[in-house]
Image (tube, rainbow, N blue to C red; front, side, top):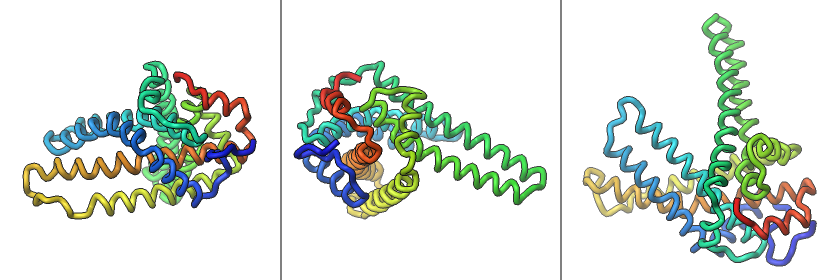
Length: 279
């Protein structure tokens, strides 16, 4: 399928993906920032407040924060990917349309499918890890080390296979095992490229985000009672309002690029995606 005018739906290399992710972000910044501010900022302030104010002797606060962060990130993907997809086709974005198209059932399916992917990854890695630990305890150190290394390899392989699960659920309306299979099928033949692009992109985002948030420009000293609050506001504003939507744009563009490469994006798919009804 050939690309249409004002469309980002083309085969793209890494540099073009990054450039177009920033173009989509800055062209649709009000919509994307509003979505992240409404969904992510309140929850992350709660996470930071609990981490700073509550004791975590049993690890319950840390577990709660991890679960809340995961749920917020997945729900944000529902709204971000939908509007970014519209922008990829040169269509205008809208906060009202984004918030209005979601349903409790759709959010449940998205969260459930992502949890299923995590469960598969966790089960496989845990099973291999247990075998490796058992071998070490039995005195087979080299064998155990090799098995544990295989567990790390299994984690990387499964992460790459399921990296597009959210895009499949939101844009193709495929759920559960079907979504996992579709994501795995999409990266077939492009495994190393997906891994390479993912590592370089996340390293770049992590380094820039850390550099920005570590800059000591806060007006209050570290021992001031309100320092943590200002640090949370600045850090969350940078990470959630800038890097989260740009990351969503990068992976959505990459998803479409791989579909173009594999000839899996038909005219019927384009019409369905652009109509973009409720999930």
